[in-house]
Length: 389
Image (cartoon, rainbow, N blue to C red; front, side, top):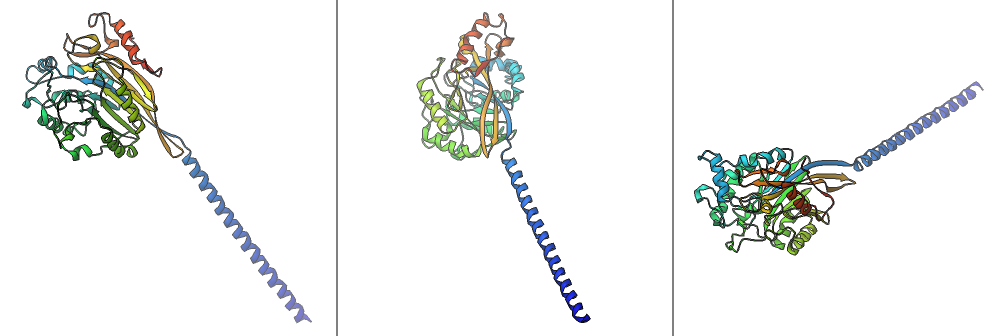
């Protein structure tokens, strides 16, 4: 009897032990999968938060118009250089103080920088000294348009000299629109500032009737819808910000032509973010075309042309915001501002912002300020002009 009772107790103990082990294992398994599920949930929450965090990057851009280097301008620079070199820096001293506050700074090199060895020349077939470029780089400019109606004034040699100069400065600036070969033209140049990747292209609609040599179309980018579409396609998906300089319009007309508007619409359809216009030698308005910001004409920056309208240029500036949200990147603009400039033709071709003028430099300058401010803002209430204070 005792043995039977002992066996029953042993059996009950074994059953209890197995039940206990089963419960413990079940609890452990449940705990493990619950923890894993919680971990996965935590991961999902973390990933969701990252995707939906809005990230902003900012930069800014300032632009001026034509460096139109007539003989009187480079002769004055020679005087500034004590008749041993050409020094254009005094002409830019006031604008340099503004440019230093910007990450990106554009100007249009209207006349070819073929250098003294080709013989300097003035209108109608220009050639300018390299020291022009030196002065603009010193003033902080780092985007240079080379495609103008005067690019091939001195033929292939002028362009090759110009490219040799700008290639020696490629760490300081992007110079676009005129090249020494197709390979050079087709190179995709992308730079980055403050987390914003950008590209810059340049085209002209005019060559003043001069024929670009067949097979050497790289010497100057003449506007062509197929060419520009192909070039933009090589940049668009690689950059956040795409800028295009356009040499277009009609000289001395303060409003855009139908052709300018058509080109702007086409470039906007290709995804260009900013269009910077030159050639008319006078100021034209700023406006949006769809989401593209268009500066139709910045006028002259430095020149010896006669008339207040041709000596008044525009320094335009804009803040550029890159926003990354929900996996999408957008570019928007803020603080679109125009600062009127005046080149003092009678006293050393020094460029003055209008707020530094007085009646001794430009008589009745306040009335000119009112006149040209209205031109700048004619197409958009988002554009402001810096005051005279």
